[in-house]
Length: 561
Ligand code: GLN
Image (cartoon, rainbow, N blue to C red; front, side):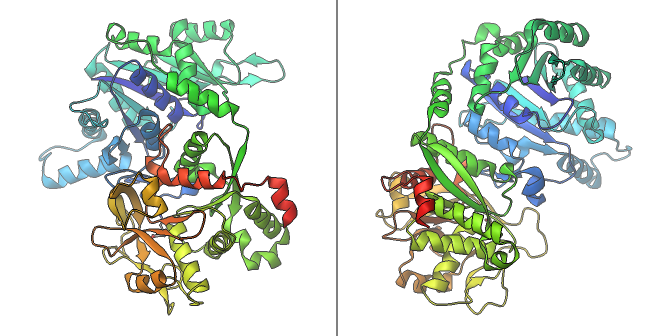
């Protein structure tokens, strides 16, 4: 097993995750089997209890792991299926060491950061790196390890110490450190400034790690002078200095690395140059080219709570992009803050109300993603009502399905107080209820999580057809509430179709509205398994319906209202 460690310097938000995934991808394109580990030095056990507003989406894995969104990048770029253990946190490491201490595994010893925590980190890395994630037998050839945060952060010190020991243990030729850093260009003089990178490489060295390769983020390609300086002061050969300048779409990042022969530099450090071929990236190149050429728009209104932060719905956006590229449409996402659609906003902030409705009405398709808590729920319900009545393509994911059921119960069954007990525990018509197996006292890891099976109820539904007429599908879940089984019959009789259910037939997984161009709600999260080149079936359905022949231009639609 060979290891590639990716660290970050100077500032956060340099796109270290995308860089690490792209490195994995070019190595895979050279014929190697690649796995990955993300280290998050925070104390939370996992990302499940963290706010998507601060940390971006909580990515859900097949095994129910609630992990950092970077694992989603790895899954999408490398087309692999990771496990919860591929995301290491300080919380997980300390918990494992403290559990061992309580069991008596260290009897007689003083348990300390060095060696107990640092050993636990190394053992964890070795164990997880050897777990296959690509559906094949046996361990991968290379494990890309991304260390979250920026060099110099107090909380990452034990990890850096562990990785320093680890690189020494696995030995030269088996470990390659790529430091992602920033080279700012001062507009006054237009000069590329290397000092911040020099300092962060020096800091890295003082912590016991030496960079083999520098990946420098900059607005333009690094000039010869800047490279020379970096090489001299950071002790890195010039050919191992790569510039990650701004590109038109992220699928170009692997191509950028390949063009600068980053794979050769890495393979040389890892002694793998003789065992590999030139990277085969034809499919990625044509997809990146196609993405830049698309001009006919498809407008999707995303009705959500965290509309200011795109990372909060990262996988949903990626799944929309995969589907749009497959439909040869340029994706335009209009963020509609759900609460701005509500009547209360009309009084309090008429401009916000007007602009939210303007966007919703101009959309070719409406998507209501997953969510928790009652903020904006009434607005989401109004958007589902609009989509149902005006026959606008609609995809509701998890909460987006639940609110569509509530809307249907209110408008079609006439149950005006129909609600989820999540938002109104005393409703007389609870059409969405707390699942019996959930916990109301412990919030971490107690939802219905991970891959679960959905059985199609007949082959005639749109969703069954989109999934290629399979009798069942496995998709990832993350929820505490479900459609009330006691109300299913009434909803069905009023025209709501339950196209997919769980193995017992009690848990509603897919709703559809027959006679509507595309109105689908799912209790699961299809976005997590969408891949470039292999878009999720239901996103494809939404975008195809939204790009349909009835599509009107934004101006046309707006003038009609
Ligand atoms: N809050 C809802 C539930 O717990 C929906 C969750 C979601 O959208 N992921 O069931």
